[in-house]
Length: 396
Image 1: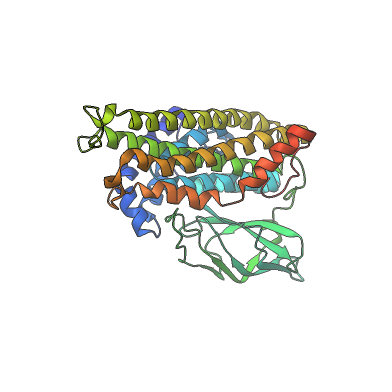
Image 2 (image 1 turned 120 degrees about the vertical axis):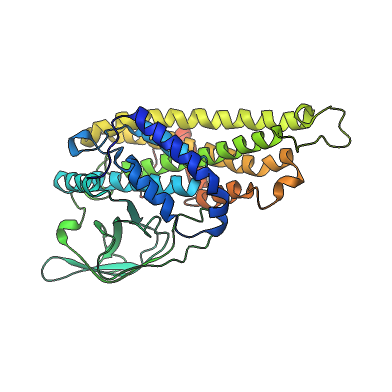
């Protein structure tokens, strides 16, 4: 039995202690890349993996709004670790939304009992895995999945395959990560989110039992099952906001330090009183607070939606989709601007690699390209002008 925290208050204190420890090595680990095994094990041992699982199945029984705060606490200092923890919970939501109660209750209980850290191979855009059904009703998965975030060092995976052909029906399953035939490549080498292990995963004649296919109700089959995409959008919005908040906090602390000097043409006695620097700091804070308000507004909507479960209506789902799109767009735009413009306030000395200020922009730029915000903005415009909600997909 893995550790279970008793309350949100205990969980947020644990998250703060972990974040303080993670912050000590964040810059060095970002530059190194690879698998943050020590840090993942610290999360395993902390009890946070069980936070969103209901008390009925042995978990803490926390809310989504509380969970997003915990994700933000970790992501502010290390967005790779925050991303891995967020995606663990995202997969727990996936099995709840797509599977039967018998399936997801057993998987949630198993997570608590065995301390499973979840990863995924659920990239729905790339249909490079074929799921061939055999005579006994089970399936064999063959192919490659890219962007398999968190799969390295995972205990359990959610996976997708196209039934019988690349154009076939999308099947989603939950299987142990050590299943025979799975090869998890250590080939993630992008500019940011360098410790998310988001590389490729290969299926070589991997057997997937029919009972492991999440088909009742399955993906995109009911308003509630389509909420998975919206939870993902909100997870990203909080992740992006946290990266921006972390960048801002570190920048302000650096500016307050003794090494920051006023520019030679400045009439101010100190850099901290320079009017141009004050404008940069003030303007970015105003924009950051605006994005934070929009993200928090969307966060407040998720638990009522989750509690409605199978009673969720298409309209309620659509209204939340618009809020999630607004939050994700705001966090993306403000975050990208802030993580770039902080250098105007920090000055040239802040570009030294040892300080790692560049990691905030790199991490944000990498992750914000997950799916284009152009289509989020389009969806909002269509709703405002025509009253139409975005069509449910794996990304909207």
